[in-house]
Amino acid sequence: MQRQAEPTSTVRLSTLIQNDQTVSSNYQRLIANTVTGVFDTANNNRSVENLREELTGKIREALTRVFNDLNLSSLGEPLNNGSFYFTKGTTKNFHYKNLSAGEKSAFDLILDMVIQSKYYPDAVYCIDEPEAHMHTKLQGKVLRELYMLIPEQSQLWVSTHSIGMLQEAEEIEKENPGTVVFLDFDGRDFDTDAIIMPAKINKAVMEKFYELAFGDFAKLMLPKKIVFCEGDPNGKTRKDFDKTIYTKVFGDNHPDTFFVSAKSCNELENIENSLGEIMTKLLNNTTIIKIVDRDDRSEEEVVELNKKNIHVLSLRNLESYLFDDEIIKQLCVSVNKADKYEECINAKRTALQSSSSPPRNNAADDLKSARGDIYISLKRILDLTQCGNNADAFIRDTLTPLITPDTDVYKLLEQEIFGTGGANNE
Image (cartoon, rainbow, N blue to C red; front, side, top):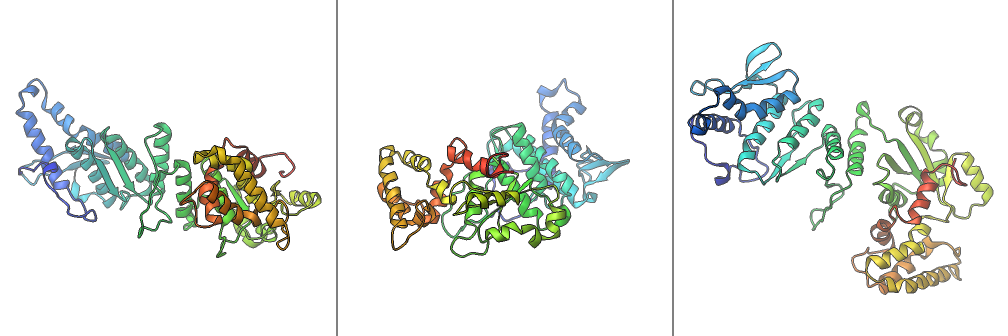
């Protein structure tokens, strides 16, 4: 036994990458707290058992909830190689050193949280991959215990690749709304400044499920719906453009849907043949939806595609929804320039007229061809900055977030893709 310095007065680790090993010092603190409690006159009327339970009860209860057959039984004899002892199944006085790596990992985390919370009641607790060395079934349970043990004025930050922890975090958020957020670090360039906003929990969880699970078919977790849309996943100029837009628009309210680029309408029509057994076996319980642009298709062509279970947008292309008058109005309002709405609409009409006139001769409703001129005009009229360096980036980063569930454009797109009934649906 030796006196332990106050954790708040010392710096144990010089860098965050160092492993924080505190089992021994935590044991010393438990013993010291016990001795202090014995000599505290306020405890004169308390039993020794009651005093011990106050100090170790939280650890024992949390450990029991994680492991059905592992229970903290005693702290041994402190002056004679004292250590933590457990009851494991029918075995008593099971020494800490004999625990499995997963059992040690879970116990160490719980022990540290109980001890440190006394000294850090309003801190940020950071844990890197707490699931390490831990059985998949235990990972979610440990996260819940850490959540329950964290002081009320503190935060728990966890970096994890564990599906079990992601699922448990989702359940905790459902039970206690507003207490869990996800930060998605994917696709960030940290050689430059990066601002990361909390992601919607359902979408963040589902995306990580797919990212982690598709690499291991033995543990494959598939979405309820897969929407195949037009777009080249290997393209250079507009790679996965439609997929990206659809995901941004419907990601929050349709977290169980996965959008996939399927190149042209012909490839999309025969997607079952190209995917073979993946479609017939692995995706047996997944709803498959196919969606294509209207383009110049006649009503007869639309009917034929509908018979092949392919949904057809009612407007020429996706840009027709993104540059809809309603969305342009939303843009004006979002930058506090609602009075510029009419000027923006006139600029859109001018861009369409220029696109449809010789020598370009595009269709009069082809907003995809006119998107460049519309982008330049909107940027100029509304004095927009950092809104996207080109038309496609502007559409993706500035216009798409404006298609919210309360807009008519969102409702129309949602009905045409997911709805039942109507001209374009089964």
